[in-house]
Image (cartoon, rainbow, N blue to C red; front, side, top):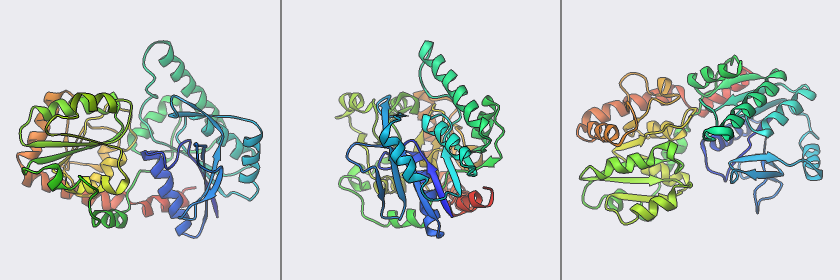
Length: 377
Protein backbone atom coordinates (compact mmCIF):
# COMPACT_ATOMS: atom_id res chain seq x y z
CA UNK A 1 0.00 0.00 0.00
CA UNK A 2 1.16 3.55 -0.75
CA UNK A 3 0.09 6.18 1.79
CA UNK A 4 0.59 9.87 0.99
CA UNK A 5 0.69 12.33 3.88
CA UNK A 6 0.06 16.00 3.06
CA UNK A 7 1.51 18.30 5.72
CA UNK A 8 2.00 21.99 4.95
CA UNK A 9 5.01 22.00 7.28
CA UNK A 10 7.29 19.10 8.13
CA UNK A 11 10.57 18.31 9.80
CA UNK A 12 13.06 19.88 10.32
CA UNK A 13 10.45 22.55 11.12
CA UNK A 14 9.61 21.82 14.78
CA UNK A 15 6.04 21.27 15.91
CA UNK A 16 3.41 18.78 16.97
CA UNK A 17 1.78 18.33 13.54
CA UNK A 18 5.21 17.84 11.97
CA UNK A 19 6.16 15.09 14.43
CA UNK A 20 2.70 13.53 14.12
CA UNK A 21 3.20 13.23 10.35
CA UNK A 22 6.70 11.81 10.77
CA UNK A 23 5.61 9.22 13.31
CA UNK A 24 2.68 8.03 11.20
CA UNK A 25 4.81 7.86 8.04
CA UNK A 26 7.50 5.96 9.92
CA UNK A 27 4.93 3.45 11.17
CA UNK A 28 3.72 2.98 7.60
CA UNK A 29 7.25 2.11 6.43
CA UNK A 30 7.76 -0.25 9.36
CA UNK A 31 4.53 -2.03 8.42
CA UNK A 32 5.86 -2.64 4.91
CA UNK A 33 4.01 0.19 3.16
CA UNK A 34 5.37 2.99 0.97
CA UNK A 35 5.08 6.37 2.70
CA UNK A 36 5.27 9.71 0.89
CA UNK A 37 5.19 13.07 2.67
CA UNK A 38 4.20 16.09 0.57
CA UNK A 39 5.16 19.34 2.23
CA UNK A 40 6.48 22.86 1.58
CA UNK A 41 9.87 23.69 0.14
CA UNK A 42 12.49 25.03 2.52
CA UNK A 43 15.75 26.83 1.65
CA UNK A 44 18.68 24.45 1.38
CA UNK A 45 16.59 21.27 1.21
CA UNK A 46 16.07 19.19 -1.96
CA UNK A 47 12.73 19.12 -3.71
CA UNK A 48 12.73 15.30 -3.52
CA UNK A 49 14.53 12.88 -1.22
CA UNK A 50 14.17 9.66 0.74
CA UNK A 51 15.16 10.05 4.39
CA UNK A 52 16.89 7.64 6.74
CA UNK A 53 13.54 6.12 7.77
CA UNK A 54 12.67 5.25 4.19
CA UNK A 55 10.08 8.04 3.91
CA UNK A 56 9.89 9.73 0.51
CA UNK A 57 9.59 13.51 0.77
CA UNK A 58 8.32 15.84 -1.96
CA UNK A 59 8.57 19.58 -1.29
CA UNK A 60 6.26 21.88 -3.22
CA UNK A 61 7.20 25.50 -3.99
CA UNK A 62 5.45 27.99 -1.72
CA UNK A 63 5.30 31.61 -0.66
CA UNK A 64 6.29 31.67 3.06
CA UNK A 65 3.41 33.86 4.31
CA UNK A 66 3.42 34.88 8.01
CA UNK A 67 7.17 34.17 8.25
CA UNK A 68 6.59 30.66 6.99
CA UNK A 69 3.82 29.78 9.45
CA UNK A 70 1.25 29.80 6.64
CA UNK A 71 2.93 28.57 3.43
CA UNK A 72 0.87 29.27 0.32
CA UNK A 73 1.26 27.03 -2.73
CA UNK A 74 3.09 28.59 -5.66
CA UNK A 75 1.74 27.10 -8.88
CA UNK A 76 3.92 26.88 -11.96
CA UNK A 77 6.38 24.61 -13.74
CA UNK A 78 8.08 23.33 -10.57
CA UNK A 79 4.72 22.56 -8.97
CA UNK A 80 3.55 20.65 -12.05
CA UNK A 81 6.77 18.62 -12.14
CA UNK A 82 6.40 17.70 -8.47
CA UNK A 83 2.77 16.67 -8.98
CA UNK A 84 3.71 14.45 -11.91
CA UNK A 85 6.36 12.78 -9.77
CA UNK A 86 3.87 12.34 -6.92
CA UNK A 87 1.11 10.68 -8.93
CA UNK A 88 3.42 8.74 -11.23
CA UNK A 89 2.75 5.67 -9.06
CA UNK A 90 -0.68 4.65 -7.69
CA UNK A 91 -1.60 6.00 -4.25
CA UNK A 92 -3.95 3.97 -2.06
CA UNK A 93 -4.67 6.47 0.73
CA UNK A 94 -4.20 10.22 1.22
CA UNK A 95 -3.90 11.67 4.72
CA UNK A 96 -4.29 15.46 4.93
CA UNK A 97 -3.02 17.13 8.09
CA UNK A 98 -5.22 20.05 9.21
CA UNK A 99 -8.01 21.64 7.25
CA UNK A 100 -7.02 25.24 6.57
CA UNK A 101 -3.85 25.37 4.46
CA UNK A 102 -3.94 26.01 0.72
CA UNK A 103 -2.08 22.72 0.33
CA UNK A 104 -4.89 20.94 2.21
CA UNK A 105 -7.51 22.29 -0.19
CA UNK A 106 -5.40 21.43 -3.23
CA UNK A 107 -4.65 17.92 -1.90
CA UNK A 108 -8.33 17.19 -1.28
CA UNK A 109 -9.24 18.04 -4.87
CA UNK A 110 -6.19 16.26 -6.33
CA UNK A 111 -7.10 13.07 -4.44
CA UNK A 112 -10.79 13.35 -5.33
CA UNK A 113 -9.97 13.80 -9.03
CA UNK A 114 -8.03 10.53 -8.91
CA UNK A 115 -10.62 8.73 -6.75
CA UNK A 116 -8.14 8.14 -3.92
CA UNK A 117 -9.65 7.49 -0.46
CA UNK A 118 -8.83 10.50 1.73
CA UNK A 119 -8.65 11.20 5.45
CA UNK A 120 -8.43 14.71 6.93
CA UNK A 121 -7.03 14.93 10.47
CA UNK A 122 -7.59 18.25 12.22
CA UNK A 123 -5.30 19.41 15.02
CA UNK A 124 -7.02 22.55 16.32
CA UNK A 125 -9.85 23.72 18.53
CA UNK A 126 -10.12 27.28 17.30
CA UNK A 127 -9.44 29.69 14.48
CA UNK A 128 -5.91 30.61 13.48
CA UNK A 129 -4.66 33.42 15.78
CA UNK A 130 -4.93 36.36 13.36
CA UNK A 131 -5.93 39.01 15.87
CA UNK A 132 -9.07 41.11 15.75
CA UNK A 133 -10.43 43.59 13.28
CA UNK A 134 -10.45 43.13 9.52
CA UNK A 135 -7.50 40.71 9.49
CA UNK A 136 -9.14 38.40 12.02
CA UNK A 137 -12.45 38.48 10.14
CA UNK A 138 -10.70 37.74 6.85
CA UNK A 139 -8.88 34.79 8.46
CA UNK A 140 -12.12 33.29 9.78
CA UNK A 141 -13.85 33.76 6.42
CA UNK A 142 -10.96 32.03 4.69
CA UNK A 143 -11.11 29.07 7.10
CA UNK A 144 -14.83 28.59 6.45
CA UNK A 145 -14.22 28.74 2.69
CA UNK A 146 -11.31 26.26 2.89
CA UNK A 147 -13.38 23.85 4.99
CA UNK A 148 -16.35 24.09 2.61
CA UNK A 149 -14.11 23.31 -0.35
CA UNK A 150 -12.47 20.33 1.36
CA UNK A 151 -15.83 19.07 2.63
CA UNK A 152 -17.19 19.11 -0.94
CA UNK A 153 -14.68 16.39 -1.89
CA UNK A 154 -16.21 14.08 0.77
CA UNK A 155 -13.16 12.89 2.72
CA UNK A 156 -13.39 11.19 6.12
CA UNK A 157 -12.74 13.77 8.86
CA UNK A 158 -11.08 13.04 12.21
CA UNK A 159 -9.97 15.23 15.11
CA UNK A 160 -6.94 14.58 17.28
CA UNK A 161 -9.14 14.94 20.35
CA UNK A 162 -12.81 15.04 21.33
CA UNK A 163 -12.48 18.83 21.58
CA UNK A 164 -11.14 18.95 18.00
CA UNK A 165 -14.11 16.89 16.86
CA UNK A 166 -16.51 19.30 18.57
CA UNK A 167 -14.72 22.26 16.97
CA UNK A 168 -15.18 20.81 13.48
CA UNK A 169 -18.93 21.23 13.94
CA UNK A 170 -18.26 24.99 13.55
CA UNK A 171 -17.74 24.26 9.86
CA UNK A 172 -20.66 21.87 9.50
CA UNK A 173 -18.30 18.90 9.60
CA UNK A 174 -19.24 15.69 11.37
CA UNK A 175 -16.03 13.72 12.05
CA UNK A 176 -15.99 9.94 12.16
CA UNK A 177 -13.87 9.66 15.31
CA UNK A 178 -10.66 10.79 16.95
CA UNK A 179 -7.21 10.02 15.52
CA UNK A 180 -5.17 11.15 18.51
CA UNK A 181 -1.65 12.39 18.86
CA UNK A 182 0.56 9.79 20.51
CA UNK A 183 3.99 8.76 21.79
CA UNK A 184 6.53 6.02 21.11
CA UNK A 185 7.27 4.48 24.54
CA UNK A 186 10.41 2.68 23.35
CA UNK A 187 11.83 5.83 21.74
CA UNK A 188 11.09 7.86 24.87
CA UNK A 189 12.86 5.29 27.05
CA UNK A 190 15.88 5.29 24.73
CA UNK A 191 16.13 9.09 24.77
CA UNK A 192 15.76 9.22 28.56
CA UNK A 193 18.70 6.82 28.86
CA UNK A 194 21.05 9.14 26.95
CA UNK A 195 23.18 11.80 28.69
CA UNK A 196 21.82 15.34 28.92
CA UNK A 197 23.08 18.06 26.65
CA UNK A 198 25.59 20.58 27.96
CA UNK A 199 24.10 22.63 30.79
CA UNK A 200 20.82 20.70 30.77
CA UNK A 201 21.35 18.20 33.57
CA UNK A 202 19.44 18.70 36.79
CA UNK A 203 22.72 19.42 38.56
CA UNK A 204 23.47 22.21 36.07
CA UNK A 205 19.99 23.69 36.16
CA UNK A 206 19.37 23.36 39.91
CA UNK A 207 22.82 23.54 41.57
CA UNK A 208 21.36 24.31 44.98
CA UNK A 209 18.71 21.58 44.98
CA UNK A 210 15.89 23.75 43.68
CA UNK A 211 12.66 22.35 42.24
CA UNK A 212 12.69 22.18 38.44
CA UNK A 213 9.70 23.41 36.43
CA UNK A 214 9.80 22.88 32.66
CA UNK A 215 7.96 24.62 29.82
CA UNK A 216 8.22 23.49 26.19
CA UNK A 217 6.53 25.33 23.36
CA UNK A 218 6.57 28.24 20.95
CA UNK A 219 7.41 31.52 22.59
CA UNK A 220 4.17 33.29 21.74
CA UNK A 221 1.77 35.15 24.06
CA UNK A 222 -0.98 32.52 23.67
CA UNK A 223 1.22 29.84 25.29
CA UNK A 224 1.32 31.76 28.60
CA UNK A 225 5.11 31.87 28.91
CA UNK A 226 5.16 35.45 30.25
CA UNK A 227 2.64 34.60 32.98
CA UNK A 228 4.61 31.46 33.89
CA UNK A 229 7.81 33.47 34.27
CA UNK A 230 6.01 35.98 36.49
CA UNK A 231 4.66 33.11 38.60
CA UNK A 232 8.05 31.44 39.07
CA UNK A 233 9.71 34.74 39.96
CA UNK A 234 7.37 34.89 42.95
CA UNK A 235 8.54 31.51 44.28
CA UNK A 236 11.76 30.70 46.12
CA UNK A 237 13.71 27.53 45.48
CA UNK A 238 12.28 27.05 41.97
CA UNK A 239 14.03 27.07 38.58
CA UNK A 240 12.12 27.40 35.32
CA UNK A 241 13.71 25.84 32.23
CA UNK A 242 11.78 27.12 29.21
CA UNK A 243 12.60 25.48 25.87
CA UNK A 244 11.42 26.68 22.50
CA UNK A 245 11.72 29.36 19.86
CA UNK A 246 9.36 32.07 18.70
CA UNK A 247 8.84 35.80 18.33
CA UNK A 248 8.86 36.46 22.09
CA UNK A 249 12.22 34.79 22.74
CA UNK A 250 14.50 37.82 22.02
CA UNK A 251 12.37 40.04 24.24
CA UNK A 252 12.26 37.49 27.06
CA UNK A 253 16.02 36.98 26.89
CA UNK A 254 16.57 40.71 27.08
CA UNK A 255 14.28 40.97 30.12
CA UNK A 256 15.20 37.79 31.99
CA UNK A 257 18.51 36.57 30.57
CA UNK A 258 20.33 37.26 33.83
CA UNK A 259 17.43 36.59 36.20
CA UNK A 260 18.17 33.86 38.77
CA UNK A 261 15.84 30.89 38.42
CA UNK A 262 14.90 31.61 34.78
CA UNK A 263 16.66 29.55 32.08
CA UNK A 264 15.59 30.31 28.51
CA UNK A 265 17.27 27.50 26.60
CA UNK A 266 15.98 28.37 23.14
CA UNK A 267 15.12 25.52 20.74
CA UNK A 268 16.41 22.07 21.74
CA UNK A 269 16.52 18.79 19.91
CA UNK A 270 13.83 16.28 20.77
CA UNK A 271 16.08 14.12 22.94
CA UNK A 272 17.05 17.03 25.18
CA UNK A 273 13.39 18.03 25.55
CA UNK A 274 12.50 14.49 26.64
CA UNK A 275 15.37 14.46 29.16
CA UNK A 276 14.23 17.81 30.56
CA UNK A 277 10.77 16.35 31.11
CA UNK A 278 12.26 13.24 32.69
CA UNK A 279 14.11 15.36 35.29
CA UNK A 280 11.35 17.87 36.04
CA UNK A 281 9.28 18.18 39.20
CA UNK A 282 6.52 19.75 37.11
CA UNK A 283 5.71 20.36 33.47
CA UNK A 284 3.63 23.52 33.12
CA UNK A 285 1.65 24.46 30.00
CA UNK A 286 -0.54 27.50 30.75
CA UNK A 287 -1.71 27.76 27.15
CA UNK A 288 -4.58 29.81 25.79
CA UNK A 289 -3.82 28.60 22.27
CA UNK A 290 -6.33 26.56 20.24
CA UNK A 291 -4.47 23.29 20.79
CA UNK A 292 -5.63 19.97 19.38
CA UNK A 293 -3.76 17.61 21.70
CA UNK A 294 -0.32 19.03 22.57
CA UNK A 295 2.59 16.67 21.94
CA UNK A 296 4.40 17.98 24.99
CA UNK A 297 1.55 16.94 27.30
CA UNK A 298 1.72 13.42 25.88
CA UNK A 299 5.48 13.27 26.30
CA UNK A 300 5.37 14.71 29.82
CA UNK A 301 2.79 12.10 30.77
CA UNK A 302 4.82 9.36 29.08
CA UNK A 303 7.92 10.42 31.03
CA UNK A 304 6.04 10.31 34.34
CA UNK A 305 6.33 14.06 34.90
CA UNK A 306 3.69 15.78 37.08
CA UNK A 307 1.59 18.12 34.94
CA UNK A 308 0.08 21.56 35.55
CA UNK A 309 -1.93 22.85 32.61
CA UNK A 310 -5.07 24.53 31.42
CA UNK A 311 -7.94 22.15 30.54
CA UNK A 312 -6.99 22.40 26.87
CA UNK A 313 -8.03 20.06 24.08
CA UNK A 314 -7.23 16.42 24.72
CA UNK A 315 -6.88 16.66 28.48
CA UNK A 316 -10.28 15.06 29.07
CA UNK A 317 -8.99 11.89 27.38
CA UNK A 318 -5.28 12.08 28.22
CA UNK A 319 -5.53 13.25 31.83
CA UNK A 320 -8.82 11.89 33.21
CA UNK A 321 -9.84 12.22 36.83
CA UNK A 322 -7.13 13.24 39.26
CA UNK A 323 -4.09 12.68 37.03
CA UNK A 324 -3.01 16.33 36.69
CA UNK A 325 -3.55 19.72 38.27
CA UNK A 326 -5.65 22.05 36.11
CA UNK A 327 -5.46 25.83 36.08
CA UNK A 328 -8.69 27.83 36.50
CA UNK A 329 -7.09 30.67 34.52
CA UNK A 330 -3.65 31.72 33.32
CA UNK A 331 -2.89 34.59 35.68
CA UNK A 332 0.49 34.43 37.45
CA UNK A 333 -1.35 34.03 40.75
CA UNK A 334 -3.27 30.96 39.56
CA UNK A 335 -0.12 29.42 38.07
CA UNK A 336 1.81 30.07 41.29
CA UNK A 337 -0.91 28.39 43.36
CA UNK A 338 -0.90 25.38 41.03
CA UNK A 339 2.87 25.07 41.19
CA UNK A 340 2.79 25.16 44.98
CA UNK A 341 0.16 22.40 45.04
CA UNK A 342 2.50 20.16 43.05
CA UNK A 343 5.87 21.15 44.50
CA UNK A 344 4.77 21.23 48.16
CA UNK A 345 3.15 17.76 47.94
CA UNK A 346 5.54 15.57 45.91
CA UNK A 347 3.96 12.24 46.91
CA UNK A 348 0.53 13.29 45.64
CA UNK A 349 2.15 14.73 42.50
CA UNK A 350 3.93 11.43 41.90
CA UNK A 351 0.68 9.47 42.24
CA UNK A 352 -1.07 11.72 39.70
CA UNK A 353 1.88 11.33 37.31
CA UNK A 354 1.73 7.53 37.58
CA UNK A 355 -1.97 7.55 36.67
CA UNK A 356 -1.33 9.85 33.70
CA UNK A 357 1.50 7.65 32.43
CA UNK A 358 -0.54 4.45 32.71
CA UNK A 359 -3.40 6.00 30.75
CA UNK A 360 -1.03 7.32 28.08
CA UNK A 361 0.67 3.98 27.55
CA UNK A 362 -2.69 2.22 27.36
CA UNK A 363 -4.35 4.49 24.79
CA UNK A 364 -1.89 6.90 23.13
CA UNK A 365 0.84 5.01 21.27
CA UNK A 366 1.71 5.42 17.59
CA UNK A 367 1.25 1.73 16.89
CA UNK A 368 -2.36 1.92 18.12
CA UNK A 369 -3.10 5.11 16.16
CA UNK A 370 -1.61 3.79 12.91
CA UNK A 371 -3.63 0.58 13.25
CA UNK A 372 -6.75 2.70 13.71
CA UNK A 373 -5.94 4.68 10.54
CA UNK A 374 -5.54 1.54 8.45
CA UNK A 375 -8.67 -0.11 9.86
CA UNK A 376 -10.86 2.97 9.34
CA UNK A 377 -9.57 4.28 6.02
